[in-house]
Image (cartoon, rainbow, N blue to C red):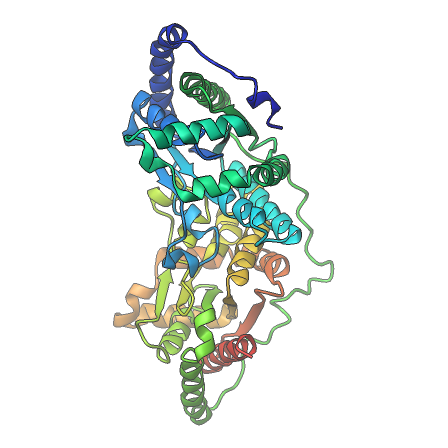
Length: 495
């Protein structure tokens, strides 16, 4: 698929000087319009062969447009912090918010291509990575991100001349490294692998644009025009009807006999206080030892707490942290998204809190808000929360592949016990802060939450990230079950 980029495309200086002023003006106007409409972000991926002018082109784009609204990121060898987290973590952190543009050098394509060329990655692993990339880019597109992928290409003899010319010039010699020449020595292998990757990842929502990189003037104008045309087309479409919703299948009806996961539970369990005190000491000690085991440095622990208001999430979290060294864990309370978080794809605000190996993250509410409160309250479209199940499963699968042990709890409290706790909070001065008008309003929507919770458990309880349903009317029983489950999951992972 590189033949069209080996035709010796050129643009004379006169032609370049004639078109650039108008192109620059239109790019700036487009950039202003992008910020004012504030409907979507633009993600530009820059990949290709060494010496094809990737850096020079990005510098030109920053000069032609307002660089204050362009975030440029270059990805090289992963840092220690990046190595100890899932592969996609560092790229999530670089995503542009709505109304702006992000330019990524390298991106998620460089590492798998290089490893495949060096035969450090088999075909099956490569195909799995391609599937992961396609899922990720589809999710970004469905979140409204405009993805523009550029592959800068040079024919083999042209690349050789280009590297030699750069190396000969004292002012550009620093740009040619031993890696560049090593990559050139494997040019044919790089071409074969790259063609395979581009074919498999050039999709309707994120197609590749192959750019011939030999002529500086040609490639700069070509890329500038592609950017201008693609973003302007999207701006015009959004001005008419800003919607990225995808068709969804009908929602499954509730069980005909009324039996579901929640009403089969028995929330009211007994647990003698004397036994609780004894078990709590033993379970906390057991958990403390598990996270100190040598093998835990190959894992992280991600704990999710969900449940109705007043189900006891906070008190359960305190019993978990009571067993841990404060230096190795972080409790992440999740509230309504901030303006910054709303401007980025939904899962961005959770990816930023993913722990490195050897660390723990405890989420007091989590990414499941999209299929719970946002679904019930209508804060997102049906298409958004319906596709969220698959996106969440992909997210948790990536965490698990990087070594994370994922433990998810639904604390099930009965309506009767919830009312008793609400009344107690209202009557106790030092607990007033725990009860709000929103809690009472959410209680009125209990019938809408029950099917949402059941759907969530059905669709996201997987082998790598199963749900544990905790009978929570008795807080002592619930706390002990949470700690016992954590210990059992860690012991299984550390075998």
